Image (cartoon, rainbow, N blue to C red):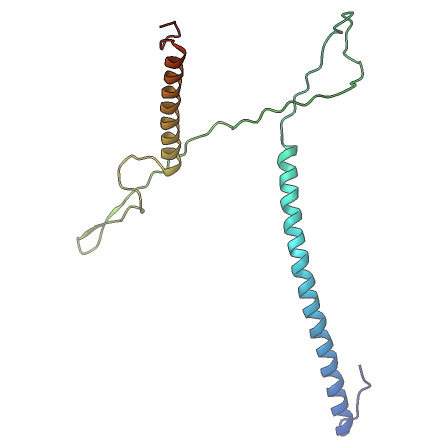
Length: 169
């Protein structure tokens, strides 16, 4: 920062003003550089958060250790014996699905003038009881999948010369 000019020193004020403008320009250039760096860092943080979430999902996996109780040769207890290897077998399942029912209450309200006005139901809610798109899709998938599987099994049995109960035809 330049030394403080004397108030009636116009040339000194102009020089100080010029120097301050240069300092502001330098500061603005640094802010632009930092904005570019911040954008790159934000992308990196987003990528890292995604990786951490993936790792956390893997860590949440339930682990069940199956340790032999007795030696397969001599029958001695293996309670405190050291583990020499681990064979991993993973079973991936889908947790039980819980249906959620949303009751839409369409209200009729009476105005002070005596007129009653009924609200509109949300789009797609057209009956007193109906199934949501996910449940309908699952039902359709299962219905067609089961029908296809039954038909396929029957065709295979006919080709093998067996009846529906598995006996030779």
